Length: 377
Image (cartoon, rainbow, N blue to C red):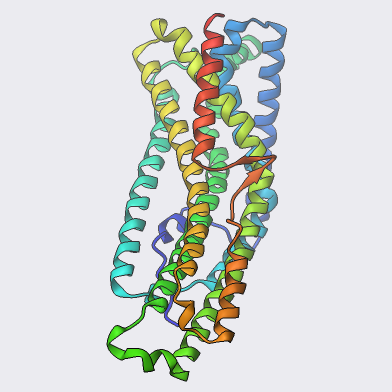
């Protein structure tokens, strides 16, 4: 079997997961997490001490963002080695593009290219959001309550924690970035492998009319069909195992993404509605790019979940269209067993909430509804 040419290899290279545990790097990340966790707790305490709804709407988005990043970064440190094992398992089972016909290869590679362009655009938005949020591009008092707290408690020394707070954030965000990037990469690769299985089945199920009826009754034809089905079943079972590994990782972090992610979108939209008329130009640019980035990330994650459902469903459809009436009893039984294994589509579900297109619609509806409620305050 030829070596797999990974169309998403650049995405894998963007996060560095290896078997060796770099103790010093992990200690630095743990120290960063502790420092930022203390800072967020202090900000929450300050807001409760001086609580009013205007304060919550103004500074809520930044605090929720930092809490989300801290929690996901902590989670990533915990499951990093398990992720490495899953990636190693994928390298062992992956099929090459050479398994399918050339026109199908071109179609899949073109699809992968479009996906890569979309992900690059989202990454550009993320980098732009972090860059334009830096102190160099203007005052940040309207977004971060920590500046007011640093000045009140540190006095003339306030620039030290102030600059550390914003310089250290990209390093903390990197672990958050790796977490969702690994998830996106894993689902994209699984979806691609399912597509390869689908195309392989479609090619195997084609009947050559020029060879006539005798070819269908030939023992060699029946043996080829049997080998193809067994090969696909073996690969399908391996992919199922990989999907279960990815879903187990996702179930750990999905509650944080759902609760804090939706809260972040609600607070961001409420911020725009309530303070749009008083925003400076740089703040308008910052908040609009920030919201656009969050919306694009939400769309990407929901789309990824939907792709997993569609890819597993398409295999079932390709099996249903197989010319089983020309096959012998053994191949027919193998097909039935394969169909049974494909009756339930793989999906990422937590407490009845499925990661798919409908989730994005629900999030959008909830975000707009609660943001309009907060407008009254």
